[in-house]
Image (cartoon, rainbow, N blue to C red):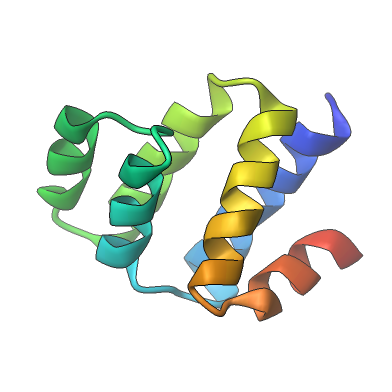
Length: 92
């Protein structure tokens, strides 16, 4: 597994268990950066629980090029002022 896929996998664990984030805002940002479609955004927002939303996002992102996706997600987290998540993702 590539280093970048590992970072994305860690991101899932971190935001699911340790450092929750504003999922609607995160989904908006993913859609703005064309990492998810507007249809996917709508479907994810309709999921009943935070954990189901995280799982759905990870499933979609995991199908994309890991390196470019990682850098896009890193930029989104910086814009959301969640450098704590980035730091946690990088230290493991």
